[in-house]
Length: 467
Image 1 (cartoon, rainbow, N blue to C red):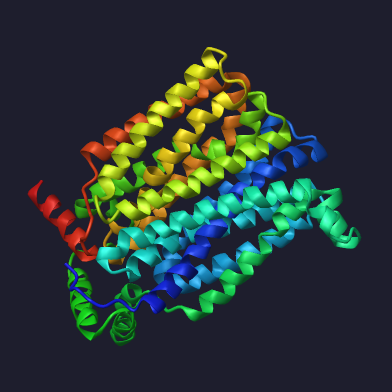
Image 2 (tube, one colour):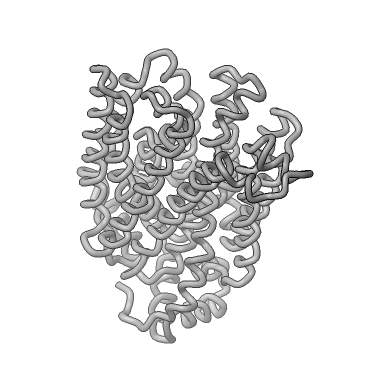
């Protein structure tokens, strides 16, 4: 266990705020597309399969980003990889805003996806590695909060640009193009601002002390830990970190699926994938389409999407408050259980033709609320803390790849499912996947509340030795 210590809240807050901007950009870039689909689809005459590719091209980029983040994170360090993601966010937002055709637009969406993938693997892991154990769950959950705020800002931004922003702006040149003639370009362009802020703030934060220790730069690591708290805290932490390096060494990727690493890898991969097969990003990406199918006009549908975004943000605070009080497991069980019920209710509404108007928003909002304090927040906490330091970068990357593969599958094939089988069947499939996630959380995932990262590593080693 970590020693009780006085935390340097100003320094730690700067670190956490900066890393969570990566989550904000993740959320913004993920959700901004929901407001552009209708406009881009009409402008370029996209069929359902092409529409799916427009959405999922960024997800393919995410998989590429995550795949390279593991090796880069261990080789270059966590901070430099976050700098790479910030640079990619800037390039993508600019390129999408001024793309001249659909192919160029998709290429820049792909580049942005690489940035999202890198950030999604490195940022929460970086937060976990710098957080005192008594605060780690809460601080990693701030990353998820930043994602939900990014999503919400994207919804508000999209709605504002579509309805009234152009009235307050001079209508000439590139402003006219972005905010009047082809407003979907303006929706993408807004993302340049937080991306540049992220890039600049990364210059102010330190490297992960656990990565520095892994590279035998112990003096630098201890200096950062001392700055986070005090000398006693730093010495105890360094002793635990260095002791954890004495265990077996991973020499190839397949070693991650053996011995003490086998169970946490299975948990990381399955929990990450199932969080996406719950259908969350079908609602994030295609919310307006779902609501239009339920009888909303496009403008009202975007307004309903804003409501979803607000609920997503508010209920993340439930996770922030409880994750270090009652633990990870109770939040997963209560939230995933509620998600299953809400998805089944939504399916029944569509089957019985009671889904018109605001009625369909009820189960969707309940699902979003349950997802936010369980799948949405706790998944990032779990996959950021269950792996040993020396394999954490690669293991988190593999778990996050599974998340993005599942995300890609949903983004690519949801339009076809919705078109060919209808929303009732689609929501039922999501409910089945969530039911399995409930079983996984109940039977396989251990409680890690209040334990240091090295304590968690020792737990897996003891479990492996006893089997």
